[in-house]
Image (cartoon, rainbow, N blue to C red; front, side, top):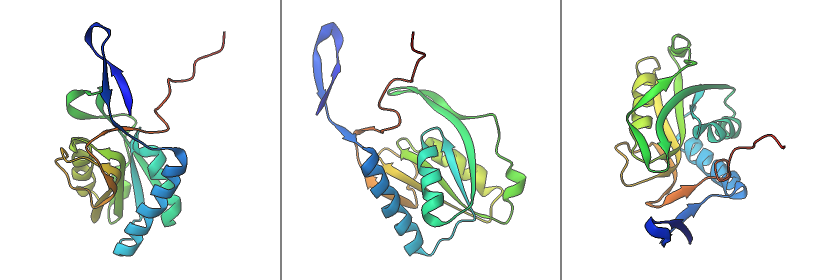
Amino acid sequence: MTTTEAAAGQTVPRTREVLTYPDFGRAVRELAQTVADSGYVPDVVVAIARGGLPLGGALAYALGTKAVGTLNVEFYTGIDQRLADPVVLPPLLDTDAMHGLRALVVDDVADTGETLALVRRLMSEHCDEVRTAVLYTKPTSVVAPDYTWRATDRWITFPWSDEEPVRPRT
């Protein structure tokens, strides 16, 4: 149980799903096994930046997939703060090179599912087959990912975004 600050200095309890780096390693292997057991063999893993980058690289290794692409999408601007719709940012993925491929689109969480839906739709215009994989799916997601490690309705603390960015030492 962690806490968050409320108005007038009050502290409100808020439960969180906490993913550690050791848990992440186990989650990747379990998620990769689920993909492999389904018979799906992706030609390329497309990681949604930024949250999907650690999982995308790790899943590509676990599945033996050499080709990895990245699509930069902005939706969340802060904790529980987001744009009206997700926006694709440069640099852009070379979608012309995706024709005829089977893609596995990867993100850390399907929260609203809007980002995953956007990228799946974009990749479907270029790939022969597109499936999706996430570490976590929330009940609020408009998309049911093809592969999910865990379902939760809690806020998730990921090990790669749990601390403030590194700043120069003074």
